[in-house]
Amino acid sequence: AILKALGPDEKVKALVHNAAVLEPVGKLMEDVSPDQWRRHMEINLDGPLFLTKALLPRLQPENAEEERGGRVLHISSGAAHYPYRGWGAYCTSKAAFHMVYKVLAAELSSSGVMVGSARPGVVDTPMQDLIRTKDEKE
Image (cartoon, rainbow, N blue to C red; front, side, top):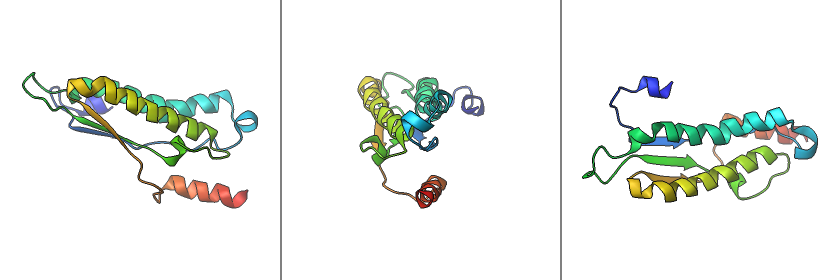
């Protein structure tokens, strides 16, 4: 859908990966099914990775003289670095997403495409509403 929305020669100057899901919430060994795990990883890890890949030609500089290409920003989470009970899928996907950022930053730097990561802290979003609801029930 994103590629179809762009004009045939339209460049992408910035790509921000901020979408993610928290669910499934529960103990990995008791509550998370293989299908839930795969769906979670498809959204939180595969989606941003393969969207970046699809848009890479449009992120790269137009010609050899132009040094700067587009920018890719991954929005990270403390869950990428610290385990939270019941958030096994989310913590794992965010940790893997953080490593994808580091690998892409290393692999793409010579192409003029810069990749960064930001961890904004707790932001009041629908995901935070879900977390608060789950915390109240436990």
